[in-house]
Length: 165
Image 1 (cartoon, rainbow, N blue to C red):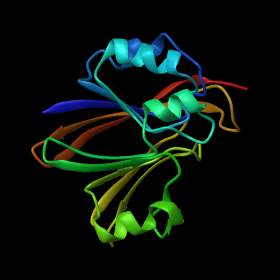
Image 2: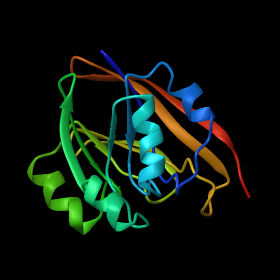
Image 3: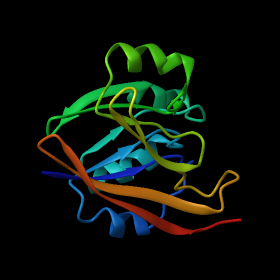
Image 4: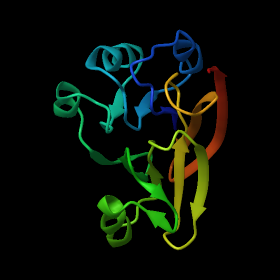
């Protein structure tokens, strides 16, 4: 069993609340637009850290993290990228990967809109944790926590970490 903390679109903003909300997590995953290697290092110091780069990330961050990451944790295959779209409207850059080999969990960021949707055509759960940073049109900063356990995705928590703007 692994407890996961998921966030996206921090845009180089650190918040001490991350330490609190991720304290009980086994891993932290970041779905892009980290903001800097310095910020990524703060997450890495907390917990094992997996991330993809996003469209605002600089070249050092892009060299450190891939654009797309596919991995398996607790018998759940995960595909993570920054710009992914939504069920029925997937981004062309990721669509072929999704349809040729659907994961059990597809994660993306970019939109700053928190959504969790089950794609029944792909038999896949789609998660976008919204935006944890303070830059963008969103008004509420969000992240997700959930548990992976022998093929199950459960105990999903939506956490509002504050307002901005």
